[in-house]
Image (cartoon, rainbow, N blue to C red; front, side, top):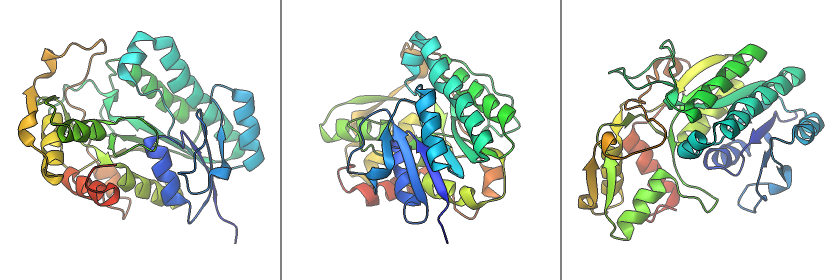
Length: 302
């Protein structure tokens, strides 16, 4: 029996590489990224250096492999960079997504689009549900939301996952988690927001959820998130405790004390009850996800 064919964009990114590791034993996995493939992927012969803006090449690649599932992890996620270059953000986060949705429709493939928790303005006191009306506050979140609309307009067989993730990179990049760990390990003081709340999932937790959703006969918009919101400051403290690092190096700071070009929502927390009722894979609390992270990456976090 042949394996289901899955194509991952951004396969060398933090989430894309993790999804590849989780899917590889069960599925025939292909993917692309804009940097060179490296031998940290399970089967890097199936991965290609290609810029998603090269539509003709991407179309040829998809037609060659005819995937049954496309997982769109790639995005321009630099919030400040998107604010300074909104046209570039629109091309990468909206127009590329629209193109992939069109290709998925032609191929009759399921499209799983990774969206963001920041599509909301953050004024609600409780975690946001899928029924709450998005109101993006910056170029990044606006273009990701436009991507959601492009998926809905082109397809019926889609899953949009709004989420926020933490984990580790196989590339020489530094995520929030890695920044906190390295700073504390180097005995450096850092500042983290006490009034910005989110519900982040560990990347491996999300990858297993995606694996289950590939097989589910469902479509639509879902929030993939931890059950309980934490502030960015509390996230740092939990991380320090789990890795036995000095918590006192983490200083409290309100959002208004830091001057961003892009406006940030204070509440990015998502309610996961809709998705939780449809899958068997659990969405872990932040602390449990951090323990899983430590178990996977070791004492030094990467």
